[in-house]
Image 1 (cartoon, one colour):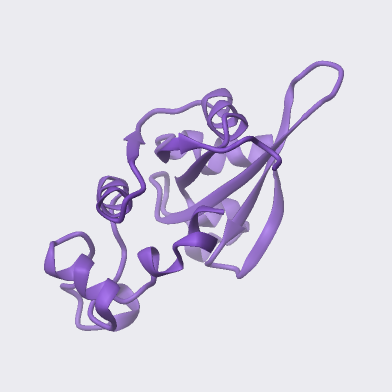
Image 2 (cartoon, helix red, strand yellow):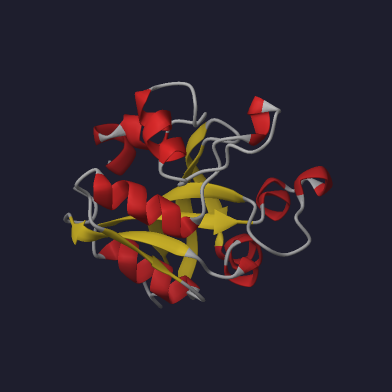
Length: 162
């Protein structure tokens, strides 16, 4: 929902369009690499700043747990998380060795209806082009929580599932 309503905010390529120029001119993304494929990345703090400057109040939260993440989703907040792409994609060439090296949007959480235990999450991943992809809790723990549990969370919430 967040990016569907405001897709211009997080377009890649800092120096390619007016939105990228906004980020690049303010030092909110990487523009130092001569290879344009390596430009455009932003820190979680910069992502929160970009969203806030575009009228979507957001904060960066550190060391989150799977329960923290589920709570933010269930409260209807927009959530972008930093993950170790190698773990998420099961791709050794993309593995950072621990820290987050890719951002994804979390769109939903699945819980066991009887126990309430988290089964996994639904994500949109620009790195694979997949939307509504289910990621089980064990993979999310390793890819996200063990990579620092960083999440950019909007202050405004919408009813979950609506």
